Image (tube, rainbow, N blue to C red; front, side, top):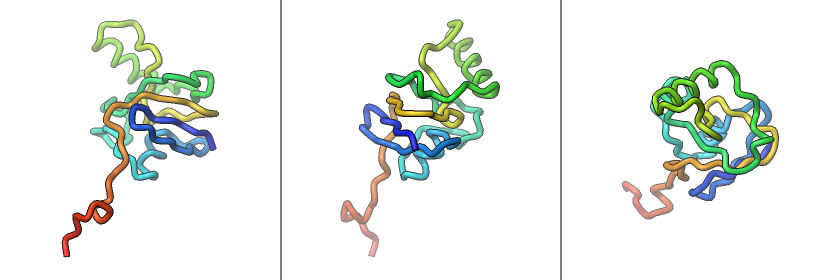
Length: 115
């Protein structure tokens, strides 16, 4: 397992070998921005690596294509430190920035039960 820290939410995820950050977040009950739900089409799940760059898994061709599309939309040759969460694996500890990622709330814990 490799630990991924998601900021600014302060969420820690234990990512299993071969599993993506997005898959791990959903399994842990974390709401993660997406439109295509892990199909590598929307880029809404994109994140920025803040620390642990050396522990990011390799960029596979499908992710590389998406990153190139994002860069061309923004008229840059590359988007530094950006990765696609539904394709990114990790080999060791990494800290990422993902605005909109948050823990799902349990309505019962907040007293919002429908009885």
